[in-house]
Amino acid sequence: MRALKSHCRRGFSLAKKKKKRKVFSRILAAITVFIGLALFIAAGLLAVVIYFNTPQNPLAATEQDGIKRGDENEYFVEVRRGESAQSIGLRLERAGLIRSRHFWNLLCRYEKEFIKTGTYRLEVPISQIAIHRILVSGKQILFRVTIPEGVTLKKTAKIMEDAGICSASDFLEAANDPSAMSRYGVPNASMEGYLFPDTYLFPAEYPASQVIKSMADTFFDKLEKLVPSAHTLSRQEINNRVIIASIVEREYRLPDEAPLMAGVFFNRLDIGMALQSCATVEYIITEIEDKPHPKVLFNRDIEIRNPYNTYIMPGLPPGPISAPGATALSAAFFPENSDYLYFRLQNEGSGKHYFSKNLDEHIRAGQLLLKGRP
Image (cartoon, rainbow, N blue to C red; front, side, top):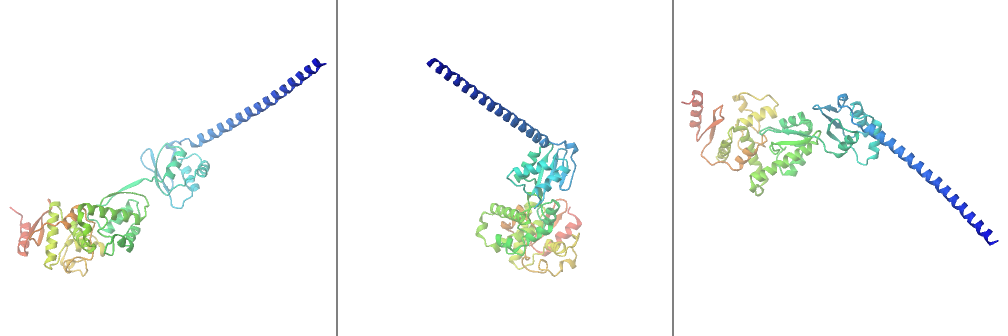
């Protein structure tokens, strides 16, 4: 009887184990199927991502609105202010730089970072994900713009506009904004003379106020290096020196003559003599009256009734007439002492001037120039 019960218990235990194995096998099979299905789906999704992310053939790409071709392997993409990601994707698709704008839209929704306004450089061939990373990075392409020494605000504005940095009107508005003068302590009606002539790197469509700030910051940085004691001077004294520097900038040809020219102007101021600078008359004609640059100044020109005309108005003009560079600024703050009151161009080719102490000598220098020196 006991043997029978023991046999029954063994049989029941074996049946139970078989049942457990069967259930476990079914679960294992289900997991295997699930894993296989998941891998299949993942592989399919990966294949889709790879397909849509594959760089397009650069030879098939074309220029579109806001997408321009540069060299053989580059395109410039402009992201406009307020433009949606969908609009950018549509333009990229039409240009042939991406395979599908729909994949682009999904990518933009997945990524948390937003695309930033600006102009970007793409080296093709390039994947769609790489394009997206560049556009959200904010690392815009920077355009090199050079402002020559001696240019005026109007000419600087045109240079900025031609370079695609900002419009000329926006630049001039920012340069004449009273808040700009207040920020830098400039006692004038504009930032004329306080925007340092240099080579700058700006992104396209950069705010004009930031362009002005960058150029003004550079001016005061350069001034501090050229004239360490400038901080001890009043704003008006600094302004007087900048005005002289702006005139010297338009007058000198040879750098070593700039300090001597500055000394001549200070000598004239000291005795109450008019500065008599042709450059100030040219400023009136070209910048105030918007006329072409004159080849020759006539008596009617030097008689123009204007505060900037230093032939008829004593003292300094109301403000600078150009953007002085380092040479002219240094000359205005460190003029060369002399008894000279006049200077005249002696050699057109070399740019050398003849300096004289009185009017008779100045006139004779003119006669010698006309006759030619032995």
